[in-house]
Length: 225
Image 1 (cartoon, rainbow, N blue to C red):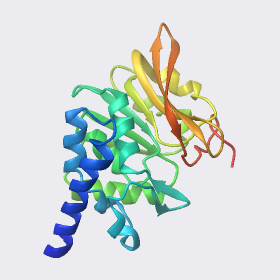
Image 2 (image 1 turned 90 degrees about the horizontal axis):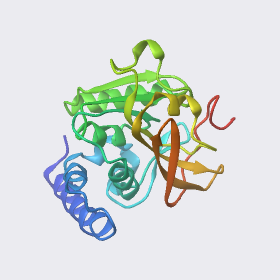
Image 3 (image 1 turned 45 degrees about the vertical axis):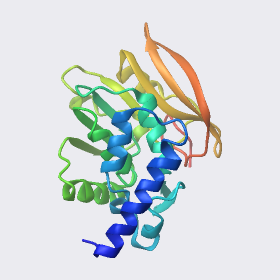
Image 4 (image 1 turned 60 degrees about the horizontal axis):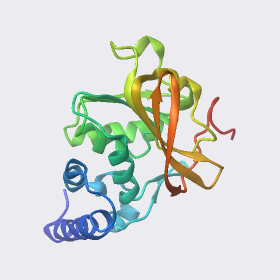
C-alpha cells in the first residue's frame, strides 16, 4: 500500500513510540504493548496527517472528532484490564483505531458511533485489516447498546467511553456486568479526569487515573450540543 521508504519511516516511528511514549512512561502490560506494535495507526489517519501517525498527539479525523494520542489509547486499554473471552462495549468508534486495538485482545467489540460517515470509514479499514470480531451501531452512545442486540449474557464485561462525559451514563452502568469495569473521561466540556469505575453490587467504585482532554460525548445522557 505504501512505498518501501514510507513503510520504513512508519516502522521507525512506531519503534520510537513504543520505546519512549509507551514503555518510557507507564505502559507495562505486554499484551497492550504487543497490540500497539501490531496495529498500523497510519491506516486510520487522513492522508494529510499520515506522516504524524506515531507522534504522541491527537489528530483530526473529520466531523470535529479526533483520533486519540497513542499513549492514551494504550493507557485506557491497559486500565480496562481485559481478558480474551470478554465482550466489550466501546462508546465512540471514531477512526476505529481504539476499536482495532481492543479487537485484538477480546472475544468481541460492540462499538457505537453517532456519525455514520466515521462508522463507515472505520468499518472499511477494519475489514481491510482482516478484523471481523467487531459489531457496529450508529446512534447515541450515551443510551447504550440496543436491548434487542445485546450479547447472550445481556451485559458487557467491560465498557470504554472514548469521549468526555459529565458523569457515567446510567444506561451504560445498567449494561455493565457486576464486577465489570468502565474506563471513561469524566468531567467538564474541555478537561476531564480519566476514571476506572468498577461495578460492585450495582454501584460504581471510581479510581482516578489522570487528567485528559477529550471531545464531548453528545447524547441524551451526555452533553448537549
